[in-house]
Length: 191
Image (tube, rainbow, N blue to C red; front, side, top):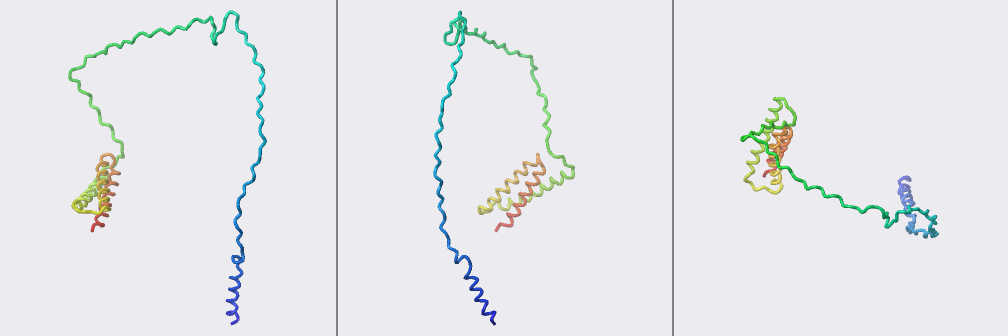
């Protein structure tokens, strides 16, 4: 019983003796910059240079403006002769010249085994077929802006897959799958 009476008293003393209640806050100190230090002026003294030595010029030449008087006057260079272009040489050409056949440039890309090539083509065909069916079913409907944006993305992926099919079959498969997934998501969102 004595404990139950002492417990509130001990708690009251512990809360009352916290340092926050007795701690007085000091005002913040203001920064006062130190006074500027006066620097002594730097004396700039021009050093004295020795007198230049005398240059002796030859007695027979009088120099005027840096050019000796005995030099001959300058003569402009002669004009180059005018260029004459020779007439074009015409070679006898056969009347019906057939241009040589240019072989098609080799295509760069992966080489797939026949089975894998068939599998990729089948996957592209199936995905694009499902996409065409979904786009055909929503063609006449009024769609909200969000669904209309999804339809534009599906059409973009569909066109990119059809274009990439000739150059890169793996990319075409991925694009067709993306279009198919968006089409399936569109079907779920339709009211």
